[in-house]
Amino acid sequence: MNKAAIFIIIGASLWGTIGWFVKHLYAHGFTPMEVVTIRVWTAAIILVFFVAITAPKKLLLHKKGDIKYFLGTGILSIIFFNFCLFKTMEISTIPIATALLYTAPAIVTMISYFLFKEALTKSKIVSLLITLLGTCFVVGLIPLNLEVLQFSSILFGLGAGIGYALYSIFSKFALKKYSSLIITTYTFIIASLTLIPFFPFSEKMPLLLEPSVLFFAFGLGILPTAFAYIVYTYGLQQTEASKASILSTIEPVVATIIGIFIFKEAFSFIQMIGMGCIIGAVILLQASGRRKII
Image (cartoon, rainbow, N blue to C red; front, side, top):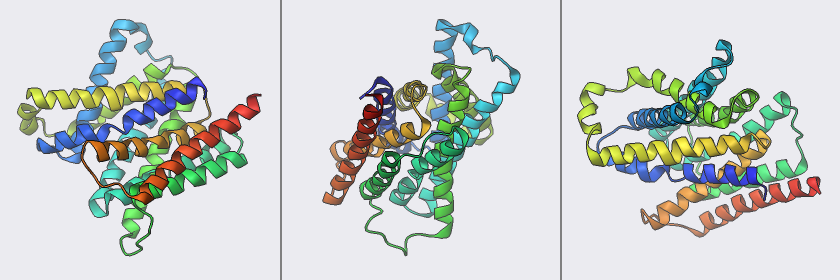
């Protein structure tokens, strides 16, 4: 497995830990969208502070017009997919929301085919189908209950998948001019500024300053957010967007493992099959890429 794939899998695995932080913040009385705001704000603070110390000149844009890339990653991706995801959870169920979110690899693969002229190979198609099937097993969408699915939940769920996919697409354009660190930093600066009007600072600020809340808030901002996106974007710099998106579906596997061993959630044989499908798809994708290099 090449280094780019390892970085992508590490980043996606860290995304899978988000539930541990989010559940603790929910327990302190924060709403889903408030947690999203906390996530992007803490990530933005950490990233700006780090870049300002290590490479302050890199914070300058090459062109003012380049802000369009970060409007894409920050608003159309980070904020949009979170809004759609939480809306789907509100009107439907978490398994359906998660399964629809992971239509992202299919969306990235198709968009990359037209925008970046990335080859739509048999191995990609097969890996994609296995990944989508495995994800449905892991999150419990299969066996399918058509009575649970509503048009609005499908619409918002697909919106989450599109928003999730757009990070890979906009980042691919931005990587021509900027490093993974700068892309991640500007992504969360834009997202945090956009979300200012939606957070009740006067009401929740005293709660936010409590030591235990600060621990989970900054933990959320560092591991499954700032560091995860830097690592993922660095890996994306060295591989195709469609492959990166498929590799990133290791996230629900990690989330499932955390649910089992930390939150004592049930784990069925069907979910085990799904986890095997996702891991198998990753192995298949890497094996096909290795044969091409050889």
